[in-house]
Image (cartoon, rainbow, N blue to C red; front, side):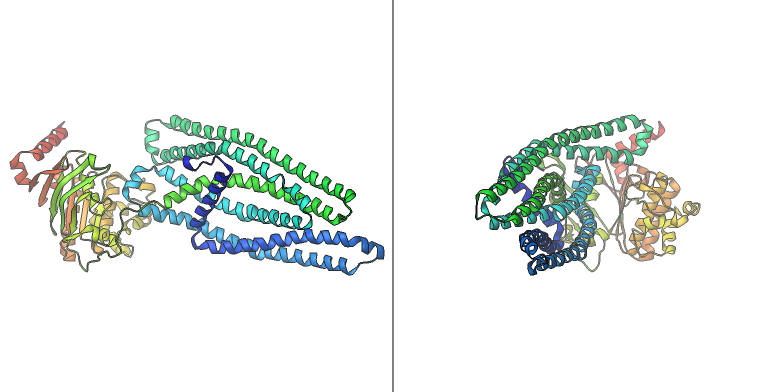
Amino acid sequence: MESKQRPRSLTESVRVFFDGIRTLKDLTGDEKYRLYGIAGIIFVLQAFEIGESVILKYLVDAMPQAMQKGWFTYDVVFWLSAMCVLMISSIISSHFFKEYLFLKSAIKLENLWPTKALKKLVALPFAYHEENNTGKIISKINKGNSRSLDILLALFWEFIPHVFFVLANAIFLFIIDWRLATMFCSAVVPMALLNMKSYIAFVEKWDRWEQLKENADTVFCEAIINFAAVKSYVMDESILSEHQQKRQQMADLDLDFSFTIQKYFASIRLLLKFTWLGTIGFALYLLFVDSEFNSVGTIVYIMTSGNAVNISLWKIIHVYSRIMRHLVSVHRLKKLLDEPVSVQSNDDAIVPATCEGRIEYHEVGFSYNGPDTQLFSGFSAQFEPGTTTAIVGPSGSGKTTLVKLLPRFYDVTSGVITLDGVDIRLLDLSFLRDQIATVTQLTGTGIFDDTIAGNIRVGDPAATDAEVWEALTAANLGEDVKQFSGQLHQVVGEMGVTLSGGQCQRLLIARAYLKLKRGANIIVFDEATSNLDSVSEKAIHEMIVNLRKATGRKITVIIIAHRFATIESADYIYVVDNGKVVEEGDHARLEQHNGLFMKLKRMQQLGELS
C-alpha cells in the first residue's frame, strides 16, 4: 500500500478499507454476482440465528403462564416449533447453499487469478520484464492470489455474518428498550478508536514486511535460476546468509507487532466484556425500580444474545485488522493486472493475405530511457526477400535491439519499420510475429522444461514426429537425439540444462525450421551460431537453401554475428556503430574499403591467433 494510502484517521481507515474491497470486487470479475447472492444468503442465515435468540426471549416470557397451568401452553408449543423450523432451515441453507456456492466461487477465482496474471505478463512489453525482478513478480502474484482468497474467506465466513448479526441485534434491542441498547452500544466508539490506533501503529511495519518478503523470494528464486554460478563461485554460504537475514528481519517484525497488537486486542475485549456486564446490571436495576420493565425474557436475551454480539464485535475487529494487512498484497496484484500494455494490435489492425518478407528500417530512432539517451537516431537499412543480410559492429552498438524492434518487442521512438511496405505498427501483432522465426544467442533462452519434441513443436504445434525428425536432421541435431534414451521424448530440463550449448542452439534452429516450413518468411539469427562447429554451421546454411527450394518462398535471413566467418557468404552486410550505419556492402567491398569492418575482423583474427 502506498504511503499516500496510509490512514491517519478513523474516517480514512474506513475509506481505505472500502477502497480495498472495491479493488477485490474488480478482481472477482463476473464472479462478483454469485458473491452478491452469497451475501444475501448470509443475511438470511443471520436473521435465522437472531430469530432463535428472539424466540428464546418470548419462550422465557411464556414460561410463567405455562408453569401456572402445569402444562404446555399454546405459546410455548408455538415458539418451540418455530425454533425447530428455524434451526433446520439454517442448517440446510448453510451447507447446501452458502458453503457450496462459496466454495465454487473460491475454487474458480483461485485458478482464475494466476491465469489472468500470466495473460497480463505475456502481454506486457519486454521493457516491463527487463525492469522488474522475476522473483518479485512471482512473489507478488502468489501473495496477491492467496491473500485475496484469505480476504474472501474472512469476509464471507466471519466479517459479513458478524456485521449482520451485530446490526440486527442492535436494532432489535433498540426496539425492546432504547436505554439498554444505548448502554450496550456505548463501547463501539472507543472500540473503533482503539482499533484505529493499533492499525496506524502497524501499517508501516506491514508494508515493510511485504517488501522484505518480496526481497527474500527474489534471493530464493535467483539462487535456483543461477544454480551453476552459485556452485562455481562457492556462493552457498553467502546466498543462505542473505536469505536467512531477510527472513530473520521478517520474523522480528512479525514478533514485534504480533505481541504489541495483542495489548490493543486485550483492551478492546475487556471494554466489550465490561460493557456487556454493565448492561446486564442496568437491566436488573430497571427490573427492580421501573414498574413498566418487567420482562425477564429481555434480560435472558441480553445475557445470551449480548454475549454472542460481544464475541461478534471482537471478531469483527480482529478480522478487520487482518483484512487491512492483506489488502496490501491485493493492491499490488491489482496494480500488476492494471499495467498498461504499450505494444499491442490496433482494433483495425491489418492482416495481409500474403507476406514476401521485404523489411525496411527508415530513419529509425530508439531509446530505452527517454530522448536524452538515444541508442539509434536516423538508422536506415533494407532486407530483401531471398537474401541473407548480416549486421555487425562493436559490442554494445545495439545490434540485438535492432532485431527486437522487428517483432515489436519494443516500438520505435521515431522513424518507421515496414514489412512489405506496411508500417509494422499497423499490422496485426500475431500476424507480424508469425512471420518471424528467431534463434537467440543465450544458451537455454526459450527452452522449456519439456521433451525435445515438445520444444521443437513450439514452431508448429501440429507437426508430426516425422516432421520433428526432419527439423532435427536439418539442424544437424538428429544423430545426437538418437543417442538419447528417450529420443524425441527425452526431457531436456529447465532452460535445457541437460543439453550442451551447441545442442541448445541447434534445438532452437530446429524449432525455427518448423516455423519457416509452416509459413514464416523471415528468420533472425542473433549470435545463434556462436556455439556451433563448422559442420553444424554449414548444415544451417544448407537448411535455408533447401527450405527456399522446397517451399518456393524467398525466405529473408538476418544474421547478427561477431564471428566474421559466419557472414562471409552474406549477400549484404551493415556495419553499425553509435546507432548508425557506418559501412555497408558485400564482404569483398567492405574488405576493400578497409574501414571499421576490417578493423573488427583483424581484431578477431588476432584474438583467435593469441
